[in-house]
Amino acid sequence: MRKLLSLVAVLALGSSLVACGSEEPKAGGGDFGKAGIKVTEEFGKKPTVTHKDGEPDKALVTEVLKEGDGPEVKKGDYLTANYLGQIWRDGKVFDNSYDRGAPSSFPIGIGSVIAGWDEALVGKKIGSRVVLSIPSDKGYKEKGNPDAGIKGDDTLIFVVDLVGATSSKTKLDAEPVAAPATPFKVTGELDAEPKVTVPAGTKPPAKPGKPVVIATGKGKPIAKGDQLVGRYVVFDYAGKKKASTWDAQPASQAGPAQPPSPTDKLQVGPGPNGQTGALDGLAGMPVGSRVLVELPASKDEKGKAVNAFAIIDVLNAFPAPKQQ
Image 1 (cartoon, rainbow, N blue to C red):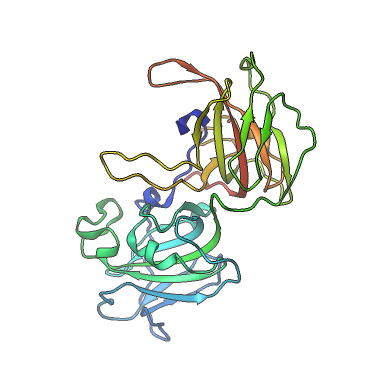
Image 2 (cartoon, rainbow, N blue to C red):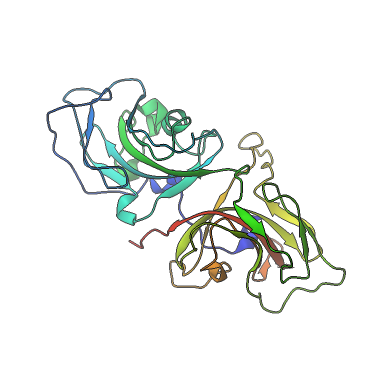
C-alpha cells in the first residue's frame, strides 16, 4: 500500500552497493589498526583506504576510528550513514555515498543489509566513524556481486560515518497546533501512531491542497530537494487506515512476518526527472513536524481509483543524492 504515497523512491544501501567506482588507492605502509586498515580524512569527508600486505582476517573485524557522542544505534533503527566500500583483493572502490553528496538510510540489525553491517553497527554511537573488514560469509557470500566486481571469496572493507538513527519510538520535539486548518480531527500522542476522524460525507479534493501542520517541529527548515526520513500513516477519505510504518509487515512465502518498518525515505521534489511530488509543500517547514498531506489520486491493482491522505512525522532531512 505504500505506493499510495506516489513519492520519489530514494535508493537504500542494499541496492546502492552494486554501483561501481574507479578509484584504486595504492598500498601503503605505516600505522595500520587492528583491522589492518589505514584511513585518511576526518568524519564526514570521503576517505582514502589502504590495507596491510597479505591476506585479510577470516573473521569480521570492527574498529571505531572516531567515537561519536550521540545515542547508540539500536536493532531495528532506521540508520542514516555515509560510507565507502572497497575490495581487499584489488583495492577497487565499488561504491561510496560521498560522491553522491548525500548519506543513505536503511533499517539496521534486521537483515535488510549484509550481515557484517548488521552485526558491526548496532551498538555504535551516532557521530562515529567505523571501519569494517567483512569476510565473504558476512558479505555477499559465495555468489559475490559480479556487477560490482565482487567475487564469492572477497573480503570487503567499509568506512562508515554514522549520521543519524530514528525509529517508531523517536520522540518528536514539536508543539501541537491549537486549531489545524483541516476538517479532520487528528488525535494521539506525538510519539505514537496518530488517529484520524473524518467527518461523514467528506469527499476527496479535486486537487490536493497544501500540507497542514498538526504539530510544529523545532528543527532546521526542510529545503527543496531534501530527502526526508519520516514515519507515516495513510488513510482513505472514509477514515480507514490503508498503510502505516508502525505496523508489522505480514508474513510471505519468502519469509516470516517482519517487525514494523520504523521509518521511511521520502523526497521533497524535484524528482530525478524534475517532476513535482506530493511533499513539495513541506519545503520551509521545520524538521520534527507532524503534517497532514493530501495525496494525488492513484489506482490500485484492479485499476480502481484510490484517494488518500497521510499523516507524516518528519524525523530528519538530508540533501538528496546528486544525479549521476
